[in-house]
Length: 333
Image 1 (cartoon, one colour):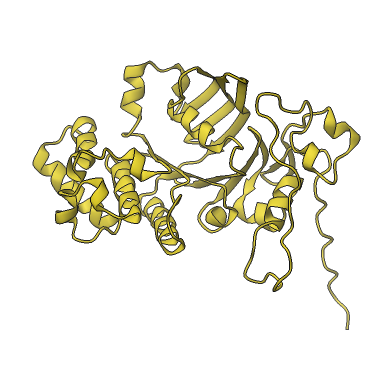
Image 2: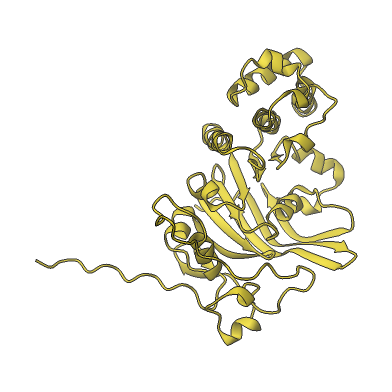
């Protein structure tokens, strides 16, 4: 028996009006996220990752429009009214934003910011909510949680504020956690701690997670599946292991080639991806990566390829995908 994915995004479009024209930030994205699994969404800055997450959450800016379907537990979130949406956000779907310094209220103590969602959605009293807040701070690795509850956000480091943001997101025990570039502006050591914390909590609680990043290394060991975005569209989708070990889209292959690895030859230059993202108000008519692709075909300039299967649960939107390496011959003396 086939179980329905927890989250199904179908042909999602998110357009934003600007003085220069309409930005087609997300232009026909479809993806699934199963119960208890982690999905990585990667791509260059400006590829539409964060806007896609905000479109799912209903957090679009003014002068914007979204269409398609966002089906969560069988309900289309785009069709819900404001009151029904408020029953979903925080309680069933929560989000960790890029910058905790701007996401936390600077004039409200941590305790109130942690407990108000629990009191509203879980219907518990202030004493029980405070006890749960202390437990949450301990769970996310905040030392001396009693004192931290009395702090204002500015009295804490960036890494500590991000841990508080994660605790707030977990407060109502959501089924889905969306982490949008959760390590922005943190130093490398703290980045790893935060990312490992998210993966540990996701596994221990059995919840689903969407981890959004421009850094392929962030999602490599912390997700089960990965979706590669480019200029508002999906370029490649598959298991994280398969996409990283055998990338088929020319963009994914180029991204991996431009990423430093521990076995990179000393002083050897990294591969570069020539050019830049296309103008989102006037994207190319064909493959959006074609102007930067060294392997494009003539038809790539006019045909915008759809995702097609290139293996078991591996989809690629490319007319000239990377060929698989020939298997090594066994045998011999």
